[in-house]
Structure formats: C-alpha cells, structure tokens
Image 1: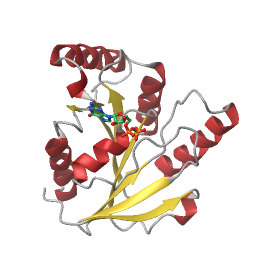
Image 2: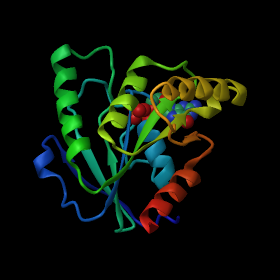
Image 3: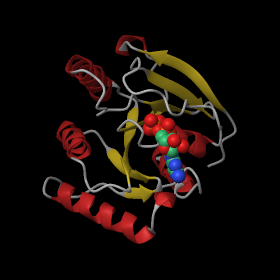
Image 4: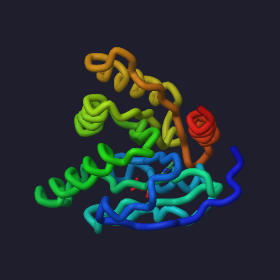
Length: 197
Ligand code: GDP
C-alpha cells in the first residue's frame, strides 16, 4: 500500500467524541515505551506523525489519524507503566475498554510486544481480554534490530505458546523494526487485505 496522505485528525479523552465511525479503523496499543509511536511513524513514513518518547503517565488520549482519506489509524495510550497510580490505571482501563468494545468500525487491534523480552503477564492478560471480548487482534513484535533474530524467534515462540493455553488459534504475528523498517510493508498489506474484504 502506498501512503499518499497521513494526517492527524483528533485527540480524545471522551469516547463519545470520536470521529464518525464511517471508515475502517485500526488501533495500535502496547506497553509504554514498546516503540508504538516509532512504528506508527515508520509504517506511515511520516517522521513526526505520532509523538515519540512521551512521558508515561501523561494525559491519556485516543489519537486518530486519517490515512489516504480511506482509513483511520488510532494511537491508543500505552499501558502498564510503573510510575502511574492505581487510580490512573483504573481510568485507563475503563476508557480503553470502552473504546475497544464499543467502536463499531474497529477492524483489528495491533498489539505491540517488545521482542527483546520474555512474555509479560500484562501483555498476555490484555490479549486474553481481547479474545474474551471477541475483538480481532494481531501481534506486532517490535525492536527486532536490537538483538539477534534467534532471540526474537525464541521470545515470539514463548509468547505464542503462552497464548495457546487460551486460544484455539493464536492470531498471526509480524516481527517489526522502526529502524530497519522490517515488517512495515507487511502491516500495510494486512490492513489492505482487510480493507478489501
Ligand atoms: P512508545 O512509548 O511505545 O510510543 O515508544 P517510542 O516509539 O517513543 O519508542 C521508545 C524508545 O524506543 C525510543 O527511544 C525509540 O527511539 C526506541 N525505539 C522504538 N522503536 C525502535 C526500533 O524498532 N528499534 C530501535 N533500535 N529502537 C526503537
């Protein structure tokens, strides 16, 4: 897919004020610092589209971008940061759960996982929850350039194995790097395929 246009549309703290649900929508989510903003910029080939290295615990916003005037890309707030309070975490959960369960044009959630780490409970729990809700998702393993392919493959295999205890069919995954652009085209092809169906 060529990216001809990529524009910021809105930032929201209120799910009732989101853009009209009249286009296919794809959301990106993951732990704080997983490389979400960098990957969104790499995929859309726009350096400053999503703001990188935001301080964890800042205002939690749902950011909508419109791509090629055709589909929405949504940058969701990062989860699982240590610095935030329980109260912040609870309000994050309510807000995001509301968005994910109610947004009728949401086609797929891309769950970002740092490929350098062994499976983390918070990521697995989030995947289980998506599964329970019947929300379609795909796994994007990030920062592949930071270590060997063998290590990424091992961590991916462990993550998939952990999900297998819950899912009959574990959703597909893509190994990515914002540095080398590994996997970026594959993410766009996946979106293209869903848009066409
Ligand atoms: P976010 O909090 O999930 O939006 O994460 P950011 O995109 O701000 O990235 C967090 C840190 O990881 C930054 O210092 C990025 O430069 C770095 N980073 C993100 N993606 C990659 C990647 O694919 N490769 C490398 N080497 N560093 C990355």
